[in-house]
Length: 502
Image (tube, rainbow, N blue to C red):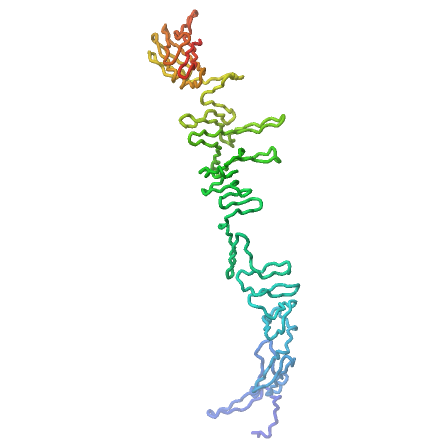
């Protein structure tokens, strides 16, 4: 066995993986080999994309590790030192220059302590107020261009900033109450109220007066003009002396001495059309009814007349027409024009109807009276004859209702005598309202043999002419036709003449 002193030296830089140390186990006495290279340290960096803190070139010495030194790249911003076995890195805040920093994405500058960083008063040009202090309750305003001042403290209820053209900037003041106005200033509130309820005299608006004591709106403060009654109705009156409470059903009443009442239009707009119309219907409903009334009498007073007059023509100009026109219809029947009157029982009834539509038929519902003038019908008259009235084949009188249709027929089976109605009944039923009013009546004796009808006078009736109606005779030489025509004429308030005409 060779002695260790006789062996050649092995430098650590020359150790190879085939170099081993002999190792013996004291218990088992077994001998083993230990690789010599595994005794040297291995160095690596665990982080990714990081800087190593050792020098890789020195690892060739096997058991020697060389660390890099640490120093500051900018001694004004960062210092490096050792304390208690630690390496200390210290940032010097005083050396930070924010003008060299980029705050667009980092946002590290979010606030600034003006207490320590700002000294003095910040001017308006720099975003400040230029004021070093301000009193409680004062407000800021621009006193001159680019200069901010503070008002006096607004310590009184109701104070406002009010424009002042003299100063050019607002002044602190309160509102001033005028006539009939009350201003109440509270903490953070201003109440403005009209006090017209205490007004006793007229409210003069320079042109019109409102007299709250008498409910009038007038041109001079007197009792005339527009009156609002306590019942809610409005009365237009030209003098207070004739004022009444107003019609209970009417919303607007015209009273006083003004004869014209309402006039529409003005002289500067001739030929214009002005309307007084009720409200149209909506959604399939009917329109509102429009009625014009004259005043009714009271006690034994007569009712007032209602007149509609067209305008008079001037010089050679024609007068205006009065047009009564029924309402048109889209697909229904056009409206009629009705003339109505009341009878003595107080019932209104139609006396004349002009019907709407293409025919425009005029219907007279009762008698037509034309005094002392002829009636012309260039197209000829057309009568509407009702059924011929037949009277009984006996000796009883016939009533006046049998006379009104105008034709009476009898077929006697023997010679008959029948009395006429009384003059009073004839005057009433035939509407003979004045003396000389007349009515024509025809009698037909339809007997087939020689049986005559003789009329006898009723009360108040006077016969003039032959009162016998002969039977009809169909022979060529016949002297009678079996018919007769009479005219009943009122001769007095309770008498009539019964005159044979043919």
